[in-house]
Length: 195
Ligand code: GRF
Image 1 (cartoon, protein in one colour):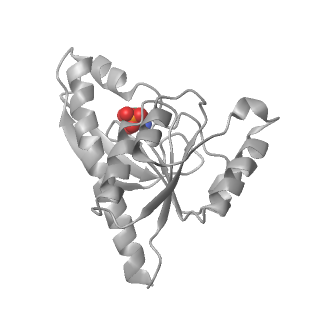
Image 2: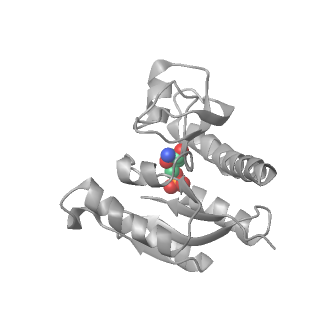
């Protein structure tokens, strides 16, 4: 039997998207394995979620390396050890450099809380509120060398609750958790149909 695709999630913060993906994998909803969580923040709350889910967390602190390439080589060694097929960014607050992009061509995906190309970069929800738009959304996209610029895989609209960051963010998170699963299901199904 063919082995399941192996996913490494990268996260820097709370990790609610990591948890949604991990639960979908552990329940069998998503046909993949998730052998490791990578974080660049040794104290990130996502590590506690990983412990609860029984998923090993590798904290690799970029400050311990002379440059991004050296940092990414260490991350890459762990990904190779784990025979990772896909990198899934979920609140990973760092641009991916040439070392990882070259090692995983078209195999790194990200989720962003806006309808890209609108509101890229930090605080997309704050940007949408400040712009006064009625509708924002969520995008899952392939990662390239830019900031939130790679080809779109799936997008879904989310209404802005005017002047209410908390409610808008909660609505976005709820959609994110569903959309990321759908996007990964789509990618894995497409890959399976190619082999
Ligand atoms: C999400 O809004 C995601 O779109 C953005 O960072 C946030 C991460 O949230 N890239 P969480 O850590 O998964 O809860």
